[in-house]
Image (tube, rainbow over all chains, first blue to last red; front, side):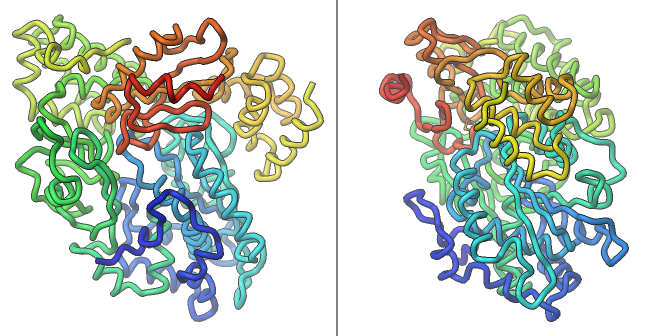
Length: 434
Length: 154
Ligand code: FES
């Protein structure tokens, strides 16, 4: 099984220098940029490869690029931004890549910049990733010294500058228009769309924001072609995916596997099943803005097209497992408190609705909840659904709640009938300090 | 007043953006690394350097949780309280820190050694519960291990 993204990453956690990166084929794709591979050819190649955004959206990269104005009349400069604000709880895949192989991101950025004729790139990195920041800073300096950055690339007129921006917290920065505001030195509040960033983005110029893992794929597509890229995958979309798992499983971790690997394979074969003494109850497939999956969904392929919309979506493909020693209501309360805290406060439904949801869930844990609270929760899943809020944060927050109300309804009921959390004696972890 | 070194660092930060305002977050973090936190006076110095209003700088400073508008201890301990760490017992970690250093979330220990803050998922969920002290991340933290981990932060 091929693992183009991670095969060279050192198991001991040390990083790869430019020298080592080049000996394993690093920056070879950049040398291929010339009239034989013009920007539009690169766009077509990536479209043919079926590369979809790995940050959770699953949007086709080639299509995203195609919205950018090209040609001599296009606004200048254009920007390419790597979204390395990996703050989705349960998600740690981009960190693995940036720490282990920082030059892969630099190379991916150069290619993405070339594809849309953007002269400037920013890596937007979450502030807590100090090790990634240090390693990327070194990699960028090495790439400048070697002439991959800051000078026209051989055989082309294309010159690319790359900057690292270390952020200062707040989950909402992962939303692409909020990220753009943050990069401009403002509060990370999302912007109204349209206009979309591809035409009016950073400092009003055309801007493409892409997930870190997505960018790591591009050099391999250039080197080995779209047919090879499709063969890596088990489904219609190309490539591998970094899958991860956390919670009470035997062996939490991450693995680069063919896109379309099933939940069961990751859970049983790679993570070694559940930890001793606990049973599986459900999981969030990719971060906390995705809906729960249960036993009946274990054989679904984890990709962008096999999960039916009524079940949910892939998200970041780093799973969080709920076990039978953990209270599902307490689990969801933790998520909703996170969303309430991270709401940027711009629109009323999100700013007011999420704390309300968290307080209702708390009343279940405290034994104060009644039947009406259950319907109040149900109603919030509609009031905070897509279309009612300014951005996707609150609707995302409703995905785990709505599905928990469906699959763990009895557990919610039991909190009402027993007047508190049935897990409170079994496990001291249900307690929530506010 | 900004020191010579601080001024040089800010000049470097500004180079990465087409306008000075772009460097607001970098400026806040850079100065905070030297001074520990962002006081009203610091805010004004940054605003003057960036040629924007003090309100603009404060609107940013109060938005981002890694910018401190209050004094903090010599070290900051960030306890991840997101879901994977919660499942694995981050609350016991918090409790133990509180017992050992008399600092609850949002507080500084009486000896000024630690400020304890909650933090969103640190991206080390496979090794939950996770804890970050200053810039160092620790995984698989148990209440028993806390004392040993924090020993080197005096
Ligand atoms: S949930 Fe704590 S590190 Fe991810």
